[in-house]
Length: 622
Image 1 (tube, rainbow, N blue to C red):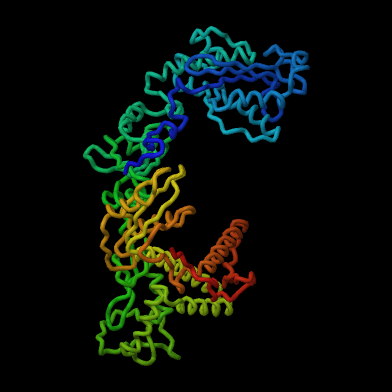
Image 2 (cartoon, helix red, strand yellow):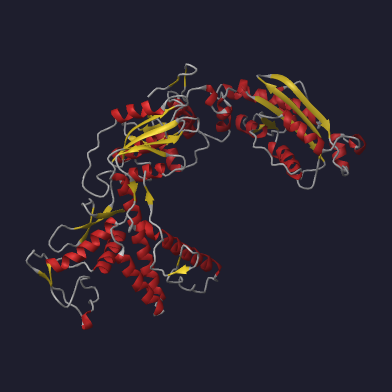
C-alpha cells in the first residue's frame, strides 16, 4: 500500500535518501580526516602524544588541516627525539592533550577517521578521551595498512610501511616522522589505493569495508544478484541451478542484507557453500518486520530450504490429545484434536508429559478397547496401589463410563485452563517426596511438572489469540507512523503502514476489507501454525503495540499455566544455583541435588506454600 504525506505532497518510502545509512554514500561524498600522531613511545597506556597532524578531505580535495604540538608532561626518550626531531624544548610551552583533544574531535566530527596503522593512532586518542572522563565517540575508521595489504600483492609491495608506499606511488609529500607531513602523505596514498579498488565495483564506504576481508572473486562477482533488490523490508530467497530454493531470510533493507552475503562479513561455511550454488535472488517486499517474519515462516514450510536450519517445518510437532471414546485416554499424535496440548518438538517429551498428566488425573493408560456399556478393570497391587508399569487408571473397584467421566473432565479442564487441581496434586506428591528426603525423585518430578506447566502456559497463550476471529493492532514504526496488522484466528491476514501524517483508520479499514479470509480448523490453534501464532503474539506484546479493535478480548484462563509463572521462575532459579554450585565443585566431587521443593513468594513478600499459584490472574483483555 503506497502512502503519501498529504501535508507536504511528498511520498514517504524507504527509498528516501534521508533515510539511508551514511556508509552507503559514494566515497566521493564522504568526508575523511586523515590523522597521524607522534608519541613518546608505543604504549597508549604508559606513553603520551607529542604531536597531532590531520588533513580533512572530501571528493579528492583538501578542505582543512589541523596541526599542533602537544605537551606530554613528561620526558621524551632520546631515541624518539632522534626519530621525530621533537625535543622537550619544543613542547615545553605547547598545549596539553586536555586542551587539544576537544578541538580535534570537533575538527573530525561526522568524518571517517583514516590512519596508517589506525589501531595505534585511535588507541592513543581513545586513551586520552578516557583519561578526560569522556567516552570515545563511536567513529568509522579506515586503516590504510589493511587496505594496502588487501589491494597490493607481496611482489608489488613487500612492505606496506608509509615510506615504502609513498615511494611506490611517487607521492608529492614524503613522510618525515612529523605528524602533518605523514598525514599529507597518507592522504595521497589513500587516494591511490581508492583508484585501485574503484575498478572492482567499490563505490561506497560500506563496499570498502566489505572488500577489506579476503573474498574469492567468484563470490564478489555475484554481488550483481542483489542489484535489483530494493532498500525496503521483506524476504529474500536464494535459488540454485535448478531454480530450487536454497535459503530464505528476512531483512529490514533487502539490498544491503543480500549484498552482505558476498563479502567477508559472511563467515558461515554452509552459507558460503550456498552462495557458491546460488544463481539468482528473488524477493517479496513487505510492509514491516512482522509481515516479513510471517512470510518467511510460510515459505520455509512450503520449500524446506536445505540451508536453513530452523523453522523449516512450522506445521510439524507432537500433540497430546484426549481421545473421543467412552473411556478417554491420552494419545500422542501429529495432528491436534479439539482438546489437545502442544505442540512438542520431541515425541519422547510429549510421551513423558502425557504420562504425568495421566498419573495426576487418573486416566487409563491401557490400550484395551472398551465400549460405553463396559467397565474399566485393571489390576492393582496390595493396598490398592498401582503396579509398577501398570495402568494409571487402575482401581480396586471396576469403573463404569459415567464414573470414569469425571477423570476425563478434570483432564480436559487442565488442558483448557478451567482447573489446575492436577498441578496441585503433583505438588502434594512433590512435598511428600521432599519430606521423605527422596530429593532425587522429587527433583525429577519437579522438572517434569515444570515442563508440563510451561507447555500449558504456552499452548493456552497461543490458543487465546487463535480464538479471536479478527484483531487489528498497530505498532509505532519509529518515524511517527504506524505498522498495522489484521490478525484472524492467529494468522496474519493483512499488513500495511500508515506513515506519519496519514490518518491511520482509513488505512485500517482498507486493510480489513482486503484481508485474507481465514476458516478455522479444529484444535486449540484452529489450524494456525504454532510458530506464526507465537511470532504474532510476541509482536502484540511488544511495548508500544496497541489493539485497535477486536471481535473479542485477548485473555488467558484463570486456572491456566500462566498462574504458575512465579513457581516456574523459582524452579529456574534453583537450576541456576545448582549449575553455579557444580561449576565451583572440584571435578572429582559430586554436587548435591537441587533443593526441593521450590517455594513460591507470596504477594506479601514472604515464603508461601509451593502449591499456591500467583495471587492474581493473568489477563490481556483488549
